[in-house]
Amino acid sequence: MATRRVRTPVKKRAAPKAAAKSAATIRKSRPSSSAHKAAPKRPAKKAGKAVGKYPDIHRDLQRQRASLLQEAGVALTNRTDFETFPDLSDQASAEMDQNFLLRLKDRERKLIKKIDEALDRMATNVYGICESCGQDIPYNRLKARPVTTLCIECKTLQEQEELIRK
Image (tube, rainbow, N blue to C red; front, side, top):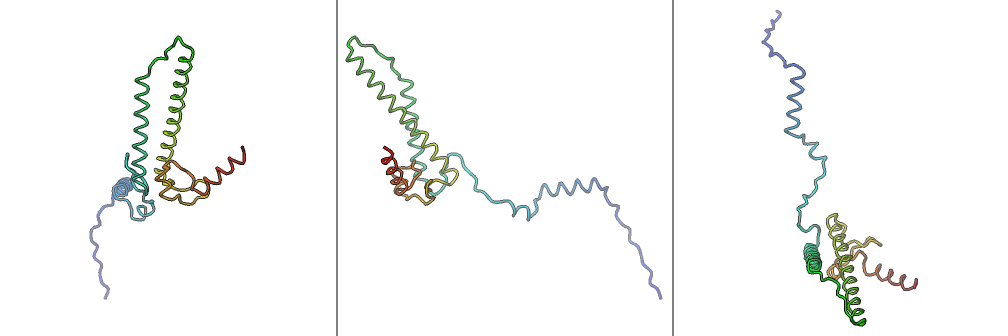
């Protein structure tokens, strides 16, 4: 005997465009697990927070930078006009003092630039690595000279080469 098949009513399928839209909506709202695993996880950078393994040095650099900028601001706002003196020796002394102060301000400007570069190296996680040999710079050296880019051995070699050139 042959069995008779009974057909059940079939739901109508949605139009292909509507199905594609709903599938795209689902993908957007719920990322696939394989796509989520493929993306590398990066730590979120927080503005103003210490980056890397030297938070105390980062804090010291920020303080030193703020102090130098504050002093520069005070020097600019309280700037005295250049005085003229009747005596030539007094005039020469005043000009020497002015030149000395300008040299100090220039050194402070260069130090601020070095501090900014050190903070940038911290942000990119290359702070504390010698630019010459690639080895880690000892913590005590970084603490004593936070803007350094060379380890003690490489700095010593650099200074010896400078003496030879003279």
